[in-house]
Amino acid sequence: MKIAIIGTGYVGLPSGVGFAELGNEVVCIDKDADKIEALQNGKITLFEEGIDELFAKNTKSGRLRFTTSMKEGVEGADVVVLAVGTPPHPVTKAADLKYIYAAALELAEYLTGYTVVATKSTVPVGTGDDIETLISQKNPFADFDVVSLPEFLREGFAVHDFFHPDRIVVGANTEKAKEKIKELYKPFEGQTKMLFVKRRSSETIKYASNAFLAIKIHYINEMANFCEKAGADISEVAQGMGLDNRIGAKFLNPGPGYGGSCFPKDTMAMSYMARQNGVEMSLINAAISGNAQRKKEMAQRILEMVKGIDNPKIAVLGLAFKNGTDDCRESPALEIVEELISPKVQIVAYDPKAMGVACRLLGNKIEYADSMYQAAQGADVVALLTEWDEFRTLDLEQLSAIMQHKKIVDCRNLLNKAEVVAKGFEYQGIGK
Ligand code: NAD
Image: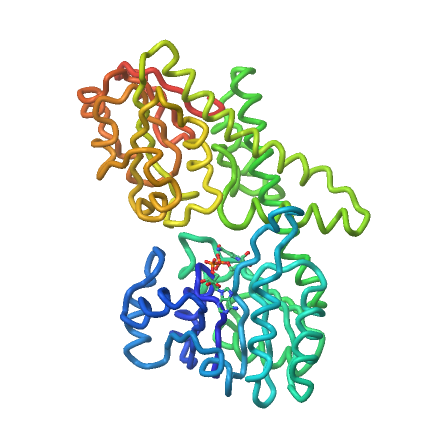
């Protein structure tokens, strides 16, 4: 099949690489000329485990190409995938659909033959109808269907998740479109559950899923607060809860709050959509406000640790919103760092993969180190903010020797409290 992917970011690029690896002819389109130039020159524009190899293989074979030209990518395509951003609207916090609508209008004139326009971007219920109207108005002769094809990949595991999806949800209102998407996902037949639903249901499934996961994180964070006061241990509590299949063990790790490019914006968009439809979603609203408060509380914990120390130095380990990615959008780590910044506090940060991205966002508001030990040199407290495996291997002897004060705030419960305390550190984890 010939596939055009519009938007070559954290969703578009792994999807493009994946579809090419399955044997399709893929053209990835982006309006960011620098990004496309880098990709044309063989330079990957984001960090994802395992993407480099497949990218190199498929660009070499000619199955995967990159362009800024909508015409070049869309003409002759069987499926056009929309993977542009849907960030929060600056005022309403609803999903801002300006990129989606622009892309729909731009692609319309290049549709040739029967084409399925599949929306992988996370879009509010009813957006498929809008896309359909826009394309029909711009190109009344176009033969096409609009399908909702929500993306469930996890950043950090995007390549793995492309080839091993938990489920493929397809919101298609015509048989012809369903058949085309079935053909697209034929290699997954028998391996993955494909669910065909109404387009509006499919659009809702994505928001309902992300909001549910965000609530689960908020819930375990509140439970961690309870454990701290009640003398229980959240790790044990989460383990006990997770053994119940009805609950499931995933998303029960307490931490500094959820972040990233999806949960914060999707919960706000879902809350907005609910209000538009006259429905009050109190759980989602509680998660949104509780999560915002969570990051402030984490910063407060770190500052408490250095209370009374003149001009304290805080070593921040982790800036990405989670491990396995360089994505710092809505990263709790960055929000916590912003809370810590003051003229009297020195902040030195290190992240294994996100230094470049974080540096562009934080600039010279903080200092940066080349390793976790360089960051911790002379520090009064180490704050662990992202769950990179590298941080689990922190050598406590070495840390002891180089820190000014032996204090650790572990917002991801990466270290073993008993071991850390035995080495003479003052330690604060989450829910312990
Ligand atoms: P991103 O910002 O990484 O990438 C979007 C890309 O689209 C950018 O490179 C931008 O230049 C490009 N673009 C915008 N308008 C364009 C146009 N008219 N023509 C061509 N290119 C255009 O965003 P992302 O993280 O890949 O997310 C894309 C969508 O997928 C969002 O709706 C998001 O909610 C959803 N989603 C993201 C994830 C994730 O883990 N990042 C997971 C599931 C769903």
